[in-house]
Image 1: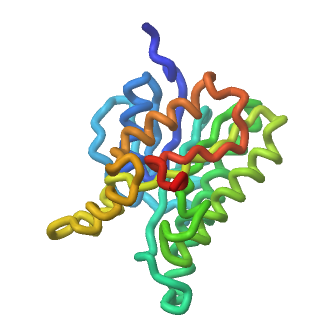
Image 2: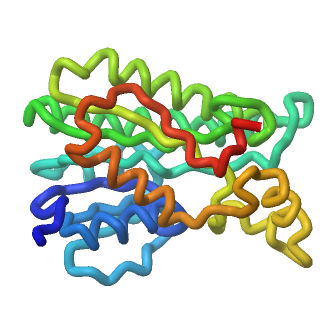
Length: 240
C-alpha cells in the first residue's frame, strides 16, 4: 500500500518535542520529507528528516531556511509556549510580548515565507496549532489565552483570503496533551495531572500522537472540503 504523503514536503515548527515531534514522526512514517524548525535539535534520525535550528521569531533565519526551499506542500505551525496561567495584573509586559512573539508573530512570519511558495504552486495545506484556550477561558493565563484566540482568528482569515487560490487552512485545538510543555503538571506526586484527568470527561490525558493523527487527516485529501475549521482534540473538555 502506497504511503499517503509520499513525495510531499512538510514543514513543521516546534518539531523537537511534544506534538511537533509526533507530527514529524507521523508524516515520516507516511513517506513525507519533513523539514523541522525548532530552537532545539530533534532526535529524529530518518533520512527524510532535515532540521533547522532557530527561532520562528527570527525573520532573517526563516527567509534563509524555509524561504529557500523549492517546494512546500504542507505547513504545520506547531511551535508555541505557555505563560504559567498568569492573570492580567501579574503578567509583565515582557512575558506578554514573548508569548505573542512565538505563538502569533512566529506563525505569521513562517506562514508568509511558506505561503509565497504555495501560491506559486497554486496548492498547499496549512494546519495551525491553536488550543482550547483559544475558545474558552481557563486553558492558560491572560497572554496565552489571548494569543491562542489570535491564532484562531488568523487561521480563519488566512482561509478566507487564500481559499480560492488553492490554499487550505485549518486548525487544531488540543486540550490536555502529555508533552514536555506540560511537564510541571506531572511533577512530584502528579496531583495537578491527576486533577486535570479527572476534570476531563474522557478521564485521561492524550498522547501527542493523537494530535498528530488528526493533523494527518487535515493534511490529507480526505478533508479537502474543510476550510477554516478548528478541530478540538480535548477529551470532551469543552462539552462539560
